[in-house]
Image (cartoon, rainbow, N blue to C red; front, top):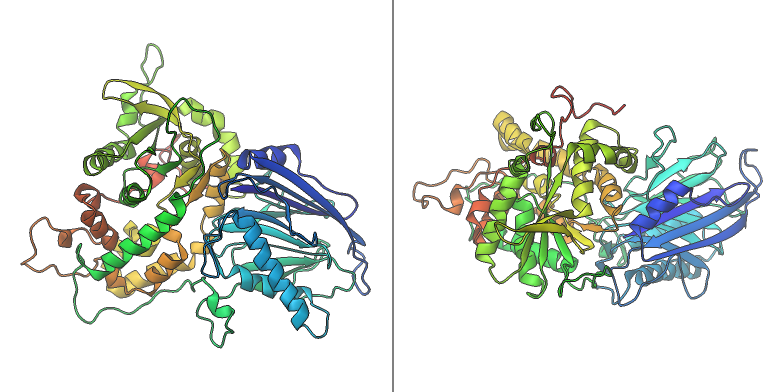
Length: 594
C-alpha cells in the first residue's frame, strides 16, 4: 500500500498540503519521496487559458510489503526518463509472478512497451494517445489491484488511472488557480471538488509543445486537456498476440440456465473448481508477507488478519489461510462491535455501558461461534479473536476524520460502513487469552483479508432472493448482471482510504481475476441454489439442503468441515456491527450527511 500525490501547477510547484501529506504518510510509513520537473508546453492554436509552463510534482509514500527491501518512490527507471508512482500489488505480469518488488517490474513493462512503440512508430511522432493505448495494453496484462501515476519526462506526458475494479483509491481535483491535483486521499473539504478517477482505463495529460487535442479528451475551462484510453479485455476479437494476454474479463454474466436440473452439494464439480481457484487466490495474498516492523514482545507476531464477522465469506478465507500460513504464525480475527445509543442503555448511576452489550451485537455472536468452529477443525493453529469494542463517544471523536477520509462519498450508509472498517483496520481491541482472562491487544499485522465480492458473484444478497421470487431465474440474472456491471463503480476506493489510514493493506481474494473470470463464465445454477429441487433421497441435514444464496460457497464451507458456518445467514456489516442508525431509526442510508 502506498500514497500517491501528483500536481500540475501553471505558475509554481504545488506540494501536498499539510492534511494530505499527513494522510499520505499514514498510508505509507516506510518511505517518502518527491520528484519535480518543469515542462515547457507552449502550443499554437490553444486557448489563452492553456498554461505555457507546467510545474510537475510527484510525491509518494510507501508501505513495503513486497521484496526483501523497501523500494523508494517515486521510482525512476535506470534511464531517468520515466517516473512511476505505484500503489498496488502485481500478483502476476503477463502470466508470471514478479520476483522481488513489483514496482520495478511494473515500471519495466510500461517502459518496454513505450520503447517498443517508439521503434514501431515509423512517423516518429509517438502521440500521447498512442502511448496511452500502449500503457493500457500493458496494464491489462497485470493481475492485481492498483492505482498509478506515470510520467514520461522526455515527452512531457502524464498518465494515471486505477485497476478495472477500482480496488485502490485515486482522486482528482482542479483548484481555484487551475492546478490539477491527483491524490490517493483528499483534504476532506466537501466543497473542494474532489472526484474519483473512473476505473476504466488510462487517463493522460499531454504537456508537450507539439501536443494536439486528443480523441475523447476533456478540455479547458480547467486548462488541462485530459485524454483517455480504455483497458483491453481478455476476449477482444481480432486482437494481437500481446492483447490476448489481457487478464481483464468483461463484467458480463453467462445468462444460460441448465436444461438438466442439478443440485449443488460438497461433491459438485463447481465446488471443486471454486475451492482450487480460491485457494490459489488466497495463497497469492497470504504467503511471503514480510515481518511487521513494529516491535512486539511476542515470539511470533501476527502477519495476517481477517476482517472477521463470523460470516460465511470471511470464515472460509480464514480456513483456507490456515492451510497456507505456517503453523508457527498466529492469525488474528478482527471482530468489531459498536455501542449504539438507540439499543444500548447506559447505567443511570455512573453512565458506564455494560460491556456485555457488545457481546450481544449480531456480528460478535456469529464471530465467536465461527471462531469456536475454527478452533475445533484447526486445533493446531493459534487463532486470536480480537474483540474491538467501540463506545459511542469514541465513535463521535473519530467521526470527523472518518467522513473526511471517505470523501467524496457522503451518505449515512457510507458513514456506517466506513466507521466499521476504520475501527476494524485500526486493530485495537481485547484479546481473550482464556475464557476468564482478557488483555488489551493491538494487532501487528499489516495485511487484511476481506470477503468482499462473494455476495455479488454468488447471489448472496436478500434482493437476489427477492428477484428470484419475483421473476424466477430470469429475474435473478437481471439483478446479478447489475451487480457485476457495477463492480468497478463500487465503494472500494472509499474503503481503501478508510482502512489504509492505519498503515494497513486490504486484500480481496474473491476479486482475483481468475476467480472472477470463472464466476462470470459459470452458469448461475453452478453458483447458487435458487430453483433447485432437492430430491427426496437427499440425506437429511446434508449440504444439498443448504439455503440457495451463495450455495457453491456454502458447499465449500461444508466440504472444509464447517457445517455451522455453511448455514450462516447473510448480514450487512452496518447492521451486524450496529453502526447503522445510531441517532434515529428514521435515517435512510441514502441521506446525505450534513
